[in-house]
Image (cartoon, rainbow, N blue to C red; front, top):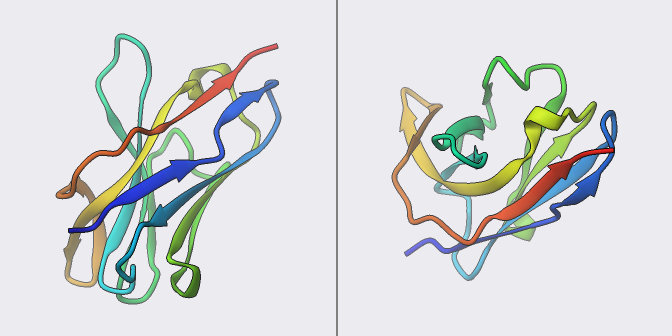
Amino acid sequence: QLQLVESGGGLVQPGGSLRLSCAAAAVSLDYYSIGWFRQAPGKEREGVSCISKSDGSTNYADSVKGRFTISRDNAKKTVYLQMNSLRPEDTAVYYCVHVITAQRLCVMVPVGSWGQGTQVTVSS
């Protein structure tokens, strides 16, 4: 079973940047599309971005397009989320998870188990 561990969160000022990492514990990530989700206090968990297993194509929520970039390094068994121009509304716990692949594209629908997540706080 795919187990993922998130890291890289922290406290950052508005306009700042963070890079989150999602590392696979044992198995290769080559066969999995991976997505990043987030959950803010009092809100439902929402999809942020995903990257497909097949050709590395990506998908982003409208709220993060142009600011966040997802990438993967299969050799390191890691998926990254580079977050730039951070806003207070980006504050949340961020999770990575195995997501659906449909017609070679990733879809932000989780099918794996949730990890502990990593806290991102954007505040001055």
